[in-house]
Amino acid sequence: MEDDCDDCASCCCVGCSVLGYAFCFKKMSRSIRIRLFMIYLNILCLTFGIITGAIFFGPYTTYFTSTDIRLIKDRLSFLFCEGVTITSVGDLRSSFSAYILDSEPIINETFIQTFTSEVTMYVNHEDYKYHSVYLLSGSVISVDACADSFIQMNIIKGKYDLKEFINSNFACDSCIKKTVNIYQRKCLRTSDFVEVLYNVSESDDYFIFYLSPVEDVWVTAKYHINRTIYDVSAARDAYSSVVQCEFTLDLKPQYIIVHIDDTGSMTQYNIMTDCKGRTWVYLSTFFVIPYLIGIFVCILIFKCCKDPDPSELTGEISPSINSPLLYNYPSYQSTEIIGPPKYEDIVRDEAPPPYPEAIGGPIIN
Image (tube, rainbow, N blue to C red; front, side):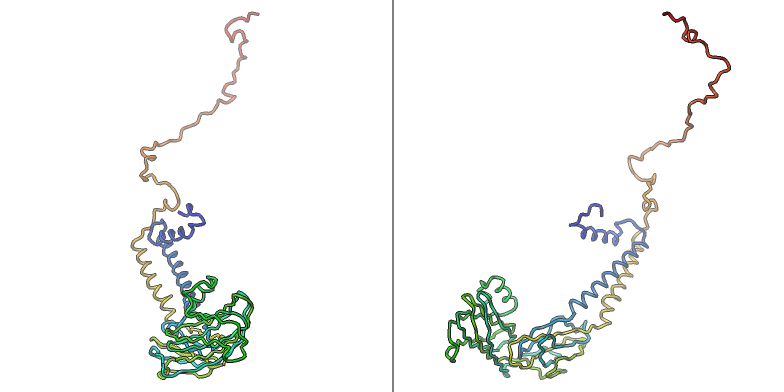
């Protein structure tokens, strides 16, 4: 089978070989088959254990803006994690509050947190800049914007639509929730600013996107956000205004909320969550259970598979093989090979006869 493999089909051939070893299609002794099976089992358990710990439940960074409040779910599991460490990382760090709840949090629309910030930025021709905020449903975002030349301001919901909008060279109209064209103003009076108001109906990331299609432009944006927040009054544990904290997770669904303190800036901050693995769950999932199954499979191999004929393993042809080429094959016996006569056997005592006598008559000239 392996001889027929090329580079493109090598993985398929390896898979067929493994199946052949496992289901007794390939001839080998049962002891070798069991050893190979255990080697494959060890490799698979180790590989999936590392992938689970390092990728599915490894460290994860979430981006926050000032006063953002998020429910943290990525790469966390109450089954595989016995604890989680939350840390503000990066060059710019912000303090935060963190809460853990035993029930799914609800949005408290009666309590509104207000955030204000003013940003001045320079946008190059045919380039863009954007600010992002995470808003819960019921929040309201207001932006007073002014520019010294024409600029287009868009409100985009969700990271997927943002990526589509950029990749389509800003031609994805369905990606935009709201568009406002801002024309040249001196930006000296309040009346020079254009107010953009947006009511949030679904919790998600929102991006205020500035696009300059005509020329380089200076933009001033004044943000005023009235945001709803989660009700954390039933929190089992909480930390306030810290840059690092740690929660212990029970074997039941739990919910972790992170709320960034008000820094007065639209700068993004990085919050990293790191799952502390639950050792006995990893051992049970990737060692005990697979090895119990492996023992059962080894017993099946020993019971169902048979050791091949030794001649089949050495490559010798057995006379009992049912092949037409071997029907009634003759039995060749060794015979004595007669060689040429020795010189001593042909030497005579008498001289040889003359030539004419030997040929039976005189020679006529």
